[in-house]
Amino acid sequence: MKLTRAMRFFRFLNTTRPKLIGGAYSGPTRVNVSSIPGGAVLHLDQRLMHLVLELAEQFAEDPDWIGEQLREIDALSNPGKDSRARHERDQLVDELLDQLGGTHLRLYGAQVHRVAELLLSSNGAGNVVAIPSQREAGAA
Image 1 (spheres, rainbow, N blue to C red):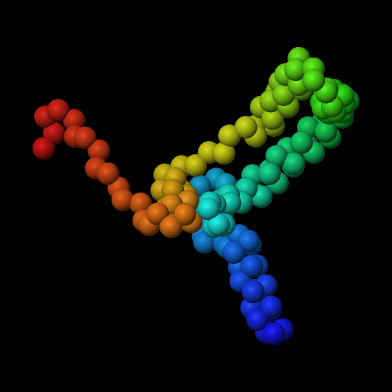
Image 2 (tube, rainbow, N blue to C red):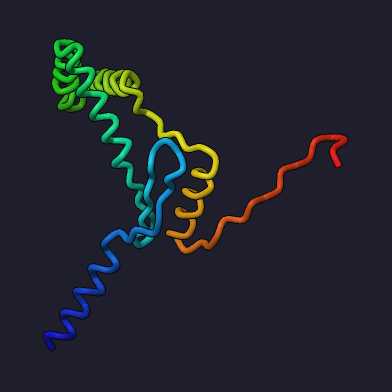
């Protein structure tokens, strides 16, 4: 009886824990992909570490400005039903992230293809098939 429970628990852990299926390391930011039931998880820890280091650098340069930005965001974080305050908070967060360079994760070249492969395989869709591009007029 105990062995059956242990097997069920092990199976449960296997289905709920993300399973790392690979990573895309060729670009400026490493991206790992794990599969979960019904989807995928993108591990962006390297990108987030870069953002925190950038925030620390900004704080070292001008602690008053960063402190004021974070205080304003915190003050607008519990606005209740005031949609204007939520909009202002979101705008402040966007501006801070833009200042830190953290609103986009850029993928280049082979990294794009690798992340697409990993995402498709995490959902059991199989391998990515490259579609040939259209040739220019007059090209043979």
